[in-house]
Image (cartoon, rainbow, N blue to C red; front, side, top):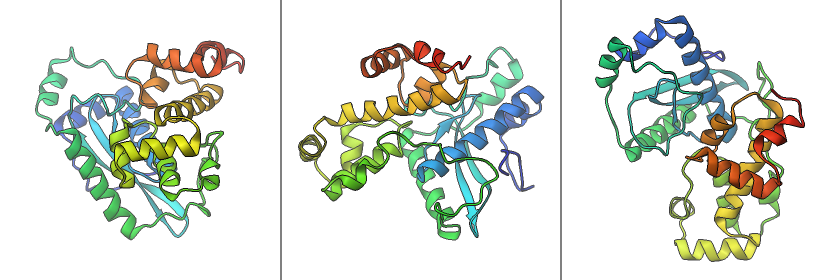
Length: 267
C-alpha cells in the first residue's frame, strides 16, 4: 500500500470477502483508511500491533522505510478471530444483512490470537531486516511528530533499572493491545511477582495504574486533536467497555471525555 492506504503492487491477493467490500466505494475508502492507520500505528510504536478493520477482519501493516523515506506499507492478514483483545481501527461497518457479504465472510480463515501475534512478529522481522527504521530523520509526506507521544514520554530515560525502562517502553508501544502483568513480564524476562515489586519501587505506582495513566494521557491527546468518537478511542486504547474507559478517564482527569473535548471545541 502507498502512504494513502491504496494498493501499490499488482501482486495483492484479497479474499472474496475483501474483494466484495472493496467493490463498494464507501467501504473501499474505509479499507484504505484502515490500512493507512494500521501502518501508522506500527510506525509510531515501532512495534506491530494487529488490528481489526472496519469489516471485522484482522490485519497487520508494516511500514516500508528506505533511505529515510516512508514509501508505504506491507499489509497482511484478512483473518477472522473472535478474540476481543484485537481492537477495531475505526467504527465497525454494518454489512451482516447482505447475503453475499455474509457468505464470503464465512469462508475467511480463522486463527487464534497467539497465531495472529506470531504471524505479525514474523512479518515485522522479515520486513525490518530489509528496510530498517531510521526514526530520527524520516522525510514524511504528513506530520507524525505528535503521534503516540504522551506527557510521560521521556520518563523512561530517568528510570534507573534497565528492566523497568524496557517495561515502560513496551507499555507505551502497546497501549492498544491487551496489556497484562503476565504478558509484560514475559517480554522483559522477569517473573510476574518480581516485576510487580520492582515497578512499584521505581515508579511509586503499580503496573496497572501506570498503564491507565499512559492510556488516559493518549486519550487526552486524541480528544484534543481529532473527531474520533469516545467509543472508538476507548477501543483503540485497549478498553473493552466504553463505560469503564469513561470511569477511568474521570478518575484521572476529574471530568468526562465529552466535557474534556468540549473545552477544545472539537465536535
